[in-house]
Length: 391
Image (cartoon, rainbow, N blue to C red; front, side, top):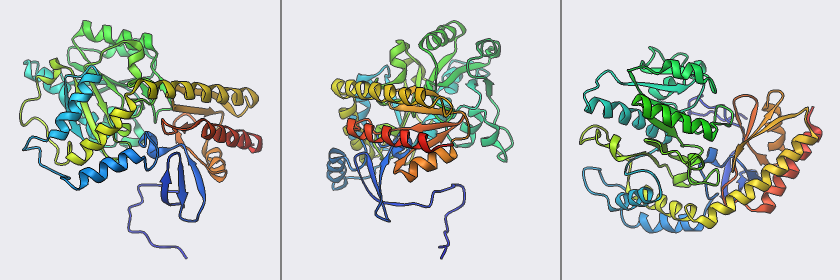
């Protein structure tokens, strides 16, 4: 008998639910055990039920959960200090999600030039069919017809160029351009990396044209590539970076990171959040940061992900008519198939491996950063099995 749900139909949910998780695994209500390589879409950076996160959550829950931002919140001050010490950032505004963080990033960029008397310098240049969140401004920043359909009128102030179209990108920069906002590695867009030389080029253009560089690291940041930020390898310093997902390890946290220059425009009253920066979230984020920012931890991510990429490329070589390309870096991985990935993902799930789709026929694979090698081998075995059965 079908059970009536009072939840809106904005999600096409799979007919499965889970009662508990541990590390890389999820346990379904029907008793089945799944290797979870979705992890809340790159959210559970340390897997399910990490003991240190449970300890932190329990300890803080007995003290104080929520305090208004009208007061000083020591836990937020501590996490902001840790982030600033670890990164390019001088100042941080805490939020609750990636969409909120990218919205705040847009506000920071526009407000900076407004504070300098450049009232018409407010347009943001983005990659077409990128992904910056589901809020009304973020969907128009993403430039996706599918996401914006039915949500008019159009939110003005965004210009778009196709991925890799440097000529169009340069042409679109005008005196009204406040910032270029791109994902360092596009997640929903198909796990496509912006090359290091291109990031360096963007930084030079921004310097020359008096434009801010916003690197959206909501999905690809916080150790997912083996570096704390995906852009670090290019040695580029952005002006603004929105983060979320992995920093909370499963607890809702977002933030916008800023250098001193652009933060100068954010005076009292220019932005706010009821729940952003609450003590409970801040303590969890602080524990996650302590674990992930450890050099040995990140080296282990690099080592294990290199092994996993090697094995996936071996599968690609064996099944070239099924797998077109292995994309990504670290544990932000995409298997681009030659045809629609829906049935492939279903077969992986049937074999107890959970993955998720992305654009361009990509199967997105997002293990926890502390995944064990034997769990990677288990995933490799399942992917091989599905390739053998797949037609």
